[in-house]
View 1 (cartoon, rainbow, N blue to C red):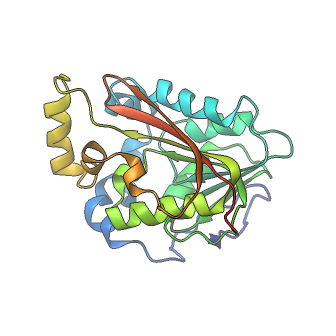
View 2 (cartoon, rainbow, N blue to C red; view 1 turned 120 degrees about the vertical axis):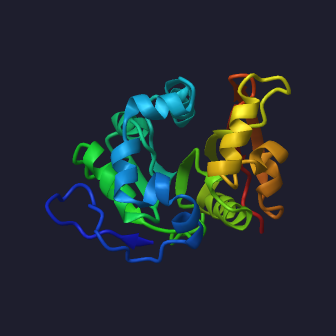
Length: 247
């Protein structure tokens, strides 16, 4: 995990213009239009637009995820990947005085964009890191958040990222996941979303064909897993609680 050097602020780590870690090929090939190119950030960093993309459900899904982290977020929290919109700024307002929030992303441009949305805060660190290979100790975080990340990952990367998330999560800690889900058979937006996935989101269809549990490591003890769906099943929220460490 590459900690980005502090420059003009002692509170937040600004993103460098040049990546210290290589950018995965799938991002450059499949998501240059959404996250990698500077113009992508200029286009998509609009609250109304991300809400439109989610058919008016951004706020509801954001608030549902934050509610599972707690009205006051304590301990160490890891957000895996930056998010367009005001998810992280709202998370910042919930941090307890002695809390720590780490946000990791492989793209410096995304970290730089997120930094511009946050109030300088010594409790927050922005780190360039590949979510499939976290440089953090086992059982280090009290809770983790993945907000519309899994559908953007090829299967091998998705499995590795989930394994890493559970590895760095403390026993009894929560992994909160919000993402796409297979909608009801006659959902009116099902044909549209099928076309969008085929054209722009090549890995998202996996979350229609398989439950997230299919991608979890089989050797990791889980205490519980709760699922809730939204908007006719098009979206899902999972709260996975890690079980006790195995001897």
